[in-house]
Length: 394
Image (cartoon, rainbow, N blue to C red):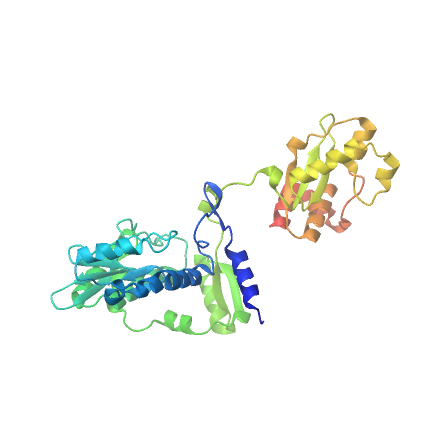
């Protein structure tokens, strides 16, 4: 697709203007900087530093002669003749762009962290090893966790490979592997198992060789992991060539942890809802893509218009609330509107509405909603409205 320069700039502006983010405290607008985690953020940060920072440094009469760094996005590594010269440069660096404020970490006791690597100054060279922040919890997937063994052992092998890649000599490697052994034992793993993977396993295992093969996603069986079904998964792989991929299931944390700010009921969209009458035991069931507040306002507006009952009955829309209000003078309690189900798909929402109307008595609805075949009646009566709606909408 060919885009003009103006079109690219307009698309970039749309993607980066007023970025929003959500945390446990609610929704916020990010006032400065690129979108956190956005696909364009890395590219834009690189372009800004290259054109707004490095370009000015290269044009400076003093710093262009002695400045040099290795940079990954906004993380840099550089060497200087003295700390005093660096402090002068650092002060200059923070004057180049009003929206960018740099921080620095200096070499301390012959050590300097960069990315997740620890640089160690020795007599004739710089040694490297793995760097961990002081806030690192060392908590990994626990041995008793209900997860496939290949995922648990994969965590050990990944950190082992990192140690072999980062550690520049045998002593540092031995220290890192010893540390990993202690960490995984603290996470519930048998010491012999961890020791075997860290120290004795050199050749790729059969499981690793299988994982290196390209997966044919046309022959994939997605299933929640279950320890007692391992033999079944093995048969599927060996006899039928079907690869098992484990999918995430609901955890205890999902059930008891409140994730982020909960949307207030009146601002909920794409719902099947139920509005009770204040003065009798009747109710109205409907569906709408609009918010509960907006749909309730539409019902109230129609009630105030005092439309003829015959016109309400002949309408293609279900005006049951207005019909009941004009005929009896009863008011509806919109503050106690109940959300029966939610679904963004219009046709599924119509089906959910039809099921709710079919399984409820004492309704003021003028229409039966989406027609549900009579063959479903025994099942609907057995399941009940609550179970059925939650199953269908899921």
